[in-house]
Amino acid sequence: MAKKILAVVRLQAPAGQATPAPPVGPALGQHGVNIMEFCKQFNAITKNQPPGMIIPAVLTVYSDRTFTFIVKSPPAAILLKQAAGLAQGSGEPN
Image 1: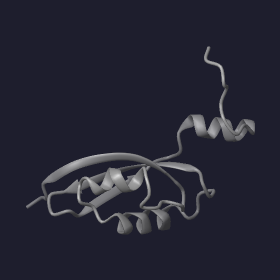
Image 2 (image 1 turned 120 degrees about the horizontal axis):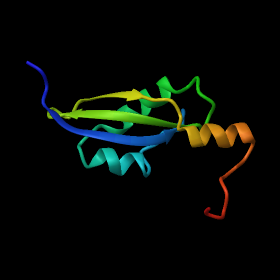
Image 3 (image 1 turned 45 degrees about the vertical axis):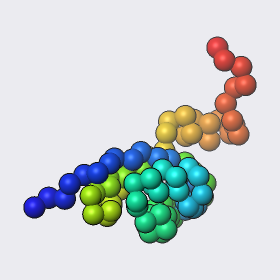
Image 4 (image 1 turned 180 degrees about the vertical axis):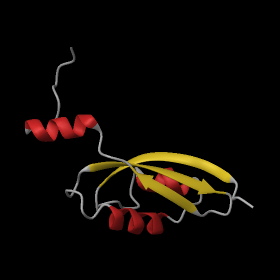
């Protein structure tokens, strides 16, 4: 029998640098997920990415408090800023 899905959590964390501190800890803690286990797995999967690159993850939490997750490619805005050599975007809105 398939496990019952309790929640789907979307979050973004720096590659190889996920810690239980915000935003990861509070987002996962409210669903009863083992935060350290997620951080270890996420950091292991993203260790080949440039350090600090923001990586989105979609985490599926099951009713027995287990989880699975997938990592996605970095957001286009992050990649564009990196390619342009900018630390941050424009300070003025259009």
